[in-house]
Length: 175
Image 1: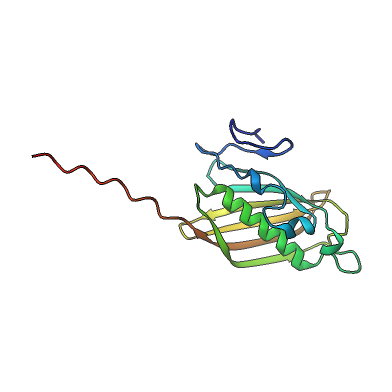
Image 2 (image 1 turned 30 degrees about the vertical axis):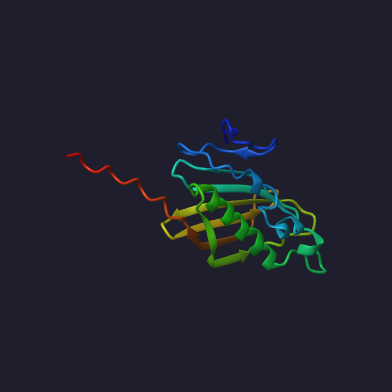
């Protein structure tokens, strides 16, 4: 993984990969992704970037808190979905240019294969699978300390791409 590009504003301890010809500064979204509930359930985003095909990715950690777990100390499936949805959204936003952003999750499927126990540490990764004009497709996963898949999700996201400013009119031809 590459270090922070010049002028990226990356915080110490974070990883930001260079983007093909552009750098979108997503540093303010590191940590809880701008959503307090992400931090309350124990998740945190720590690195992001764009690969050679201009598809975004994000990495993070998740240490389930008591808020995330049932009385038996196991994270609820809905909390897995929350963390995975946030990871896919972050990855897509990292790849979008300028003021373009995700507008909402249109569809999402989550699978849980193993329990996520209270206080255990998990790795989170979100990636863009395909980016189109109005929608993006993402996938995300949660893995345990041995690299075993704990949960995964795929999703379709509506995009907001602001209209570009009108082009300057060509000067009228002279007489």
